[in-house]
Length: 299
Ligand code: SF4
Ligand code: SF4
Image (cartoon, rainbow, N blue to C red; front, side, top):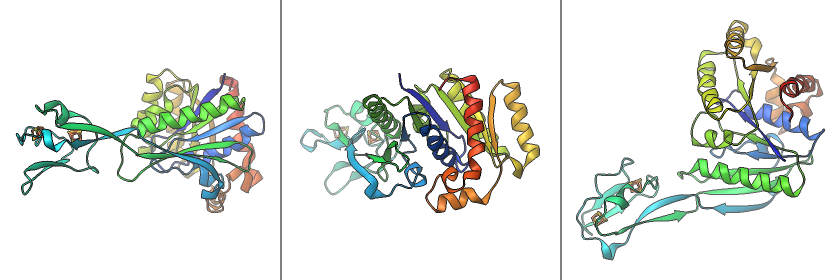
């Protein structure tokens, strides 16, 4: 059965996608994999693997969110819907004497539909994302989800991206789907983590990263998924790296690896290459991470 390895980071900018792209390249040398970019607000895994728009062979628009819409002929102008929207998406058009629903603000929660006595509001499915499939020069495919501007429903989009990646993995007999989650602890992260076999949390040595890491780990613990930590740029603040290590020791979480600060990682990003491809000297760092992972979990 295909396993799912998910990379998360409580805080943005910790180097999660750099770690994901390097691990994807290293893993693809020993097994068949598929990658899934589930950072649907800002998908960058494809870029860090060197894919350009033309490298995506197919894309499909999907509808995973709903918006309120008025059925004008049914509306009796009672105004009961006017003040129930927590997202401030309903205004009153005085000229036409009807409620107006702001599509950008509407989250499709359905409250207005529930309070309407005339069944004059319907929730209509809207196109809110695009899922693209591309092939990297490292022989594995990538499924990438992209949320449309101002749209919601990112958790469901992530589930669609994962579903598609698993479908491709089944067809191609791939053993592993590597998921690059978004940062934070919101719906897309929960949807990324849910159903994973192992989670790698990438952090860096500063208080906000540790605080966000702890919040991210709560999600992982909620689902009871085994997890390991990678400390990126650990040498920028060794004292704080020690604090992170003490935290992981106390909570029996494995440190899979520590990556030193090196401008080469930035240069690799600028050149649209995974760091392990841009500079082979980075390979041992990621070999060690995978070796440590394999000691505690069979991926
Ligand atoms: S569906 Fe929810 S968010 Fe949208 S307008 Fe109605 S109450 Fe507001
Ligand atoms: S609650 Fe229904 S009937 Fe009343 S104003 Fe709103 S849409 Fe019209």
